[in-house]
Length: 327
Ligand SMILES: Nc1ncnc2c1ncn2[C@@H]1O[C@H](COP(=O)(O)OP(=O)(O)O)[C@@H](O)[C@H]1O
Ligand SMILES: [Mg+2]
Image (tube, rainbow, N blue to C red; front, side, top):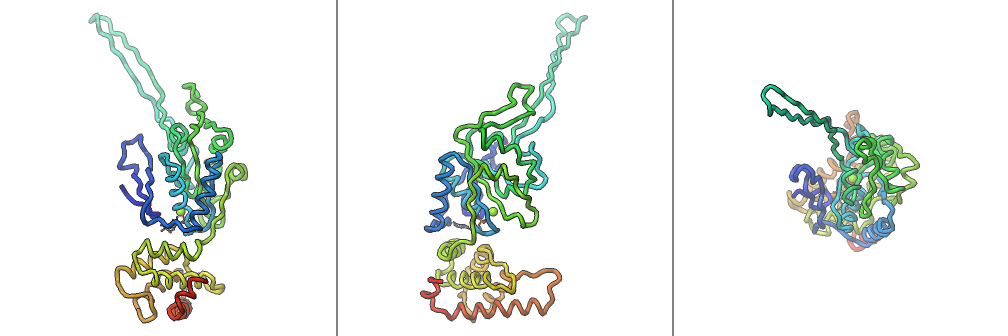
């Protein structure tokens, strides 16, 4: 068993026999279910139960993949996981011809007569979408807009007519596969302007219910940082406060996704001490994790941004924590 970032246990494909390429998600004690998360989970489940695929869209670090796993675990069916990939063709989703198998019978019953019979059979290997549709799994297609739109076209008839078109199996009389009634699909995507993503075709977007996600709310961020790192809640509050203030900084761009806050908290948990101004190693960790250092950033520019981070740390560490919760 391995754990994914979201804290769900999942079996890796390598640990399973070849044809059981499944993830079995089970809830973890690190998962945070605040009222914010619960409301989104309920909404998503209501759409899926009504037969509609759900699509979590939002920038990195807004909890899309974690939510997809949690919702899939709540459905209670095995999960098939696919990661969007620019090099995908539709056969990477559906399956492909895997060549021919040849059977030869040599009949030499009468020693002077040799009879040979040959049979050629075309082999077909299902890929993940096909096996999910066949078996009624929940498909998580993570960051599906990293795949080119033409690779995802095969999903159109799956999502609207409940039919998977398998031209490669037509010769075996299996050109169409009726989708299992328990099949569900959950998609995640980053906004189109993200590097390496494509604009999804309108027809596909029209067949799913999109839930737009923005950064998690304050309470959820504090809970996640506390649970994922094991630090004191008061320290998590300060780290989250610093991150949220930097997020609003108009002039400068900082790396302020929840991943940075979790990483700072994990480092603090290992090195000891508190999230406070006097803790120099904490301040250094904040510079390293919040600052976006580009290859061509000048020393002056980097130092100027560290000064901004310093000011924010100083303020966050002097503020009353009860007041802080209300911001
Ligand atoms: N509800 C949650 N409970 C616990 N951890 C969470 C939760 N939502 C997000 N996280 C954590 O926040 C980080 C980013 O979440 P992730 O789902 O990977 O975001 P995205 O897919 O939008 O980039 C991960 O480390 C994940 O474990
Ligand atoms: Mg993700």
